[in-house]
Structure formats: structure tokens, C-alpha cells
Length: 515
Picture 1 (cartoon, rainbow, N blue to C red):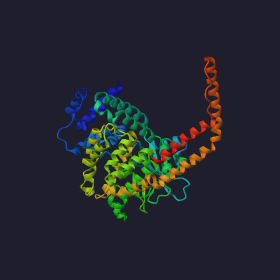
Picture 2 (cartoon, rainbow, N blue to C red):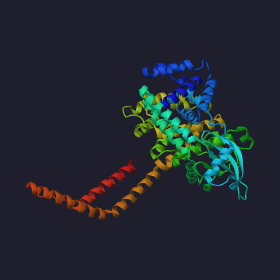
Picture 3 (tube, helix red, strand yellow):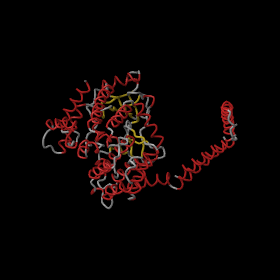
Picture 4 (cartoon, one colour):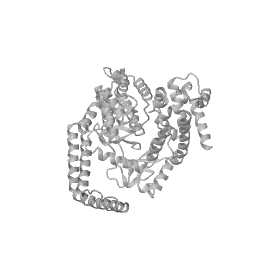
């Protein structure tokens, strides 16, 4: 009953902002048309896209942190809310009024078990505030160089509020799956699952510290990207302390130019950094908007706020690389085959038909400047194609898709003529060369030989085990035959069994290398 009340309250608030204007009522099942018709009575009339976006942003902020996160998440899903609504939600900023510094100090003291002035020489008012936490600038006692640190403090009561609101989101997702079978392929409940896991991880600041540590290991050889160091001795579940970042925010284009940095170079660095991390490590910053990115005095990209991280496995990395490479080289047949091989497109569809649809998406990209390409049109066409070919939402790729949209947006604001495909090509080609080229095949063959050598060293032990197993089987069979008056069974030597096992193992290894 409480979920129904909360869902109704949120629905009325969002309807008054025009949030549900994206829904085409005639295309909905009969059971779902009634509630959506009701929203038409509540929503304002004749709003411009900009005004609707502003009203929706205000409504989501009024409903609280959970709804801000939901709105940001939906901004990456034009397949659900439509391109126009996704664009409106894309302007939603994760900013909230800060909570009092006195409360932040209480949380810090409780977490560290010490008075604030026993740890910090000074502790500023909030310098940034979002839905999950806010940041203060401070100086450590005993710091000889007086270098400042950033102290991130979790919002009071935010866990309880998210847990309550997530129950409402699940109720809405389950209703949608029941009432609108044609959108089940979008997996609304699975999408809420992803949102829940993401937010839960984001609300334990020790996990964000661990993300800094893991990514720092991954990028130790990079010269154009860095992270602030974590102060582990002062980091707890509700507070995270890192070195302070001195630099220019990517949102301040005039300051970037004034500092002598090249916006075009920075735009390329943002996209190539993301692709490099996703492809080579399978671990990437999944919230790379301008507010979380800086340029330091040496011209290096610096990232903060690693609360939302994405992971993709080897299969998804290969999928990403081959899809990007296919679009870059205009090999639509190969893209289609990769989709079918990965199981993202059901086998009832032919690769040739899907390649034809992909060509309709890819061809408008080539031969035109980036400023001439309508990304909204391309996205809309892409999601029409996914529906036509029965493609289900892939939860493991949602954050990847979201981040690709965000980083391309950042790059284009820095460089209006930015070309995503030419910028991506060196990173993708390098990954393909390392992982799918002849060198990679030889490396895989070397691994296979090593595995065979290890297998050969184990053959005596395998033979001994096989001998014991064969003896047990023959004894058991003989006893059964004697009891039934049958003949003694044919004997197979233990080395025959071991050799058979070895042949199977060799065949499996060769297949894995030659695929």
C-alpha cells in the first residue's frame, strides 16, 4: 500500500512536469492506456522542449536523490523514453543543496573516532554537493607541504531513502512488464537491478577508494591521464579522503583556452582514455561528465568521483572492439555476424538482413563532418532497428553505452567538429592488433603448448587414476555378470583411457586457438 501511495505521488508530480509526454498511448496495451491517459489531463500544454526539460529537472530534484539518479539513468535509454525525452533528461545535473557543514563534521568525527581538529587544520564549507555526498576542502595536521585534501562525506539518511524509493521503482517496473508485454524485451526489472547495484556500490565510499586504487594500477604507464591519490588511513564507509586536484574543469572552456590548452586535443584524450580503459582493462569510469574531469598544469586529464565504475568481460570487450572497427571500416556484414555470434540478435534473423539495417545507420556517418551528423537521428534509427530484430537489453552493456554517449557529448562541447570515428580508430586498431592479430594467435598457441606440457607431466598420475577406475569398473561389471551368468567383460588398459583423455584435451586446445 505504501508503494502504491509513493508511486501515485511520484506519478502525479512527474505528470505535471510533462515527463510522460514521450508515451504513445495508442501503441500501449489496453490495460496500460488508462493510467497514461490520466497523465495527459495533468501535464501542461504547449511546452517547448527546453521548458519541458526544465520542469522535469525540477520535478526530479523535488522527489529526491533517487529520482535524480533514475532520470540520469533514463537519459541514456532513448529506446525506453524516446530521443526527445532522453535529450531533455540529459541536461539533468546531479546537484542538490548542500547539507550543513556541522552535520558533515559530525559524520567525519564519528567515522574517525576523533575530534575534527585532531585531524584537520581547517575544514571548508561544501565546495560541491550531489545526491549521494558532498565534498569539503581541508588541510591535514602534520602536513609539511600544506597540500590540501578533498573530503567526501555521505549524505545523512541517504541509504534509507534510496532503499525506500527502490521499492517504488521495482513496483513500477513489474507493473510495466505485466501491462506492456511488447516492452519486456527492454527488461525494466533488470534495469532497476542495475540501478540498485550501482547506487549501493556508490554509497560505500571504501569501494570508491578501491576503484581509485585499481584504476591507478591500470594506468601506471599512462602519461596523459592521472587520478588523485587516496588517503586510506582516513577513508571509511561514510568518508573518502583524497589529494586535492588543482586544475581547470572541462566545463570551463574559456579557462581552458586561457591556460593555453588545446580543446581539440583534450576532446580526443577524453574519448581515447575511455576506450583504452574499457577495451584493455574492462574497467572504466562510468560517470565521465565535465564536472568530474580536470586538466592540470601539465595538460594531463585528471578524473575524480569514481563512485560509478563499469566492468565488461573479454566477450564484451571483443564485441565492442569489433563493432567499432566494423563501423570505422564500414564492414556491416562483420558487425552483423558479431551480433549473432554474441547472441545479441536471435538466430532466427539472418546476418545479411541485419547488415543491411546497420548500413542504414552507418553510412550517414561517413563523408560528413561531425557537426553535420544528427546523433539524435542515428540513435533513434538504431533503437528502431534493435526492436525490429528482437534485441533484448544487455545489462552488462548499459553502463558502457551510457558512458559512450556522455564522453562523446563532452568531446563535442570541447570541439564542435569532433569526429568520434577517426578518434576511436587508433585505440580500436591497437586492441585488435594485440588481441586478434597474428601475434595474439601465436601467444594463444604458446599458452596451448604450455598447457599440453603441463598435461603431459600429469599423464602418469592420470594413468594411475584411470587404472584404479578401470579396475573398479571391471570388478563391478564382472560381479554383475557372474550373478547373471554372463561372460567376463573386455578389458581396456589404463593407458588407453589416459590417451583418450589426452586426445580430447589436445583437440579442445587446438579448437580454442584456431577459432
